[in-house]
Length: 154
Image 1 (cartoon, one colour):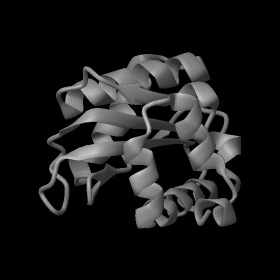
Image 2: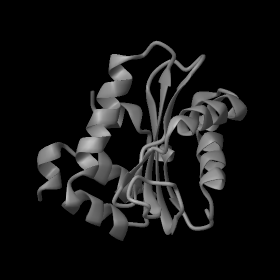
Image 3: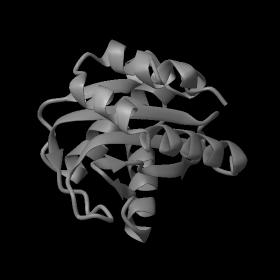
């Protein structure tokens, strides 16, 4: 699974006004609704219900909120780089400024897990995370995220 297949250029956001986790989820759900033509509330409920099971804040300022959405046709990713980190109840109690929202069709199983694994692996690379944190242009962020793995080392 290539990240370019699930992360559209217009699914990458640089957020300057997000102050809370709730506001972030609302903003991302609205963009996801625009991309998928599904109701905002359906997407928001899927993300919030998963988050209630435990924070998707992985540590090091990174979170990967995710959920399964009825009516979704394929795994869809959104990325947000926050200008100001927000409280996220992350495992290391640090605020979050890099967010990947993953949405999967109900019953997507393996594809959902592959996408989650792919993003998690990429975001464990300190050089990639540093590049993402220095970038404010959504097009350049998209290019970084969808580059071939060998390109990250360059």
